[in-house]
Image 1: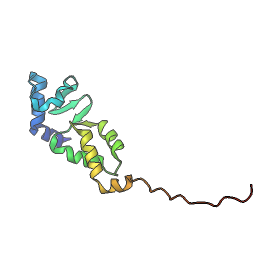
Image 2: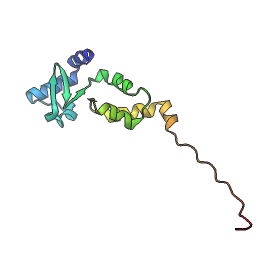
Image 3: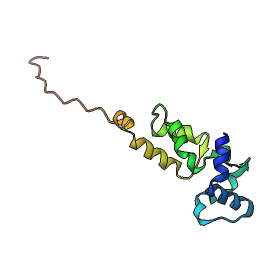
Image 4: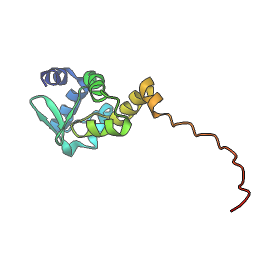
Length: 125
């Protein structure tokens, strides 16, 4: 949790959001946050969207890696993350990570269908 505070204080995107929330000065580079301005608030330098922590950009990769433990797949991983955290393009980041994984790609491949076999017709009922 302390690393989230440290990275949040040094994150330029979160700084711009703070300026937007408190001074109503929204920069064009943070348009994705403007849509949720009524849901945003700060608690000890940590940006929140409702009850979800907005992860600073430098920590997104480590949060994705932690949620990916056990190779849960796209749907389960999105569910894990959405319940606790948020950042712009979170869904896209999850999809890219899972699709790039060799393990998930192998597990997710459909089983090959068994070839159809001809059977002899019965001679009697």
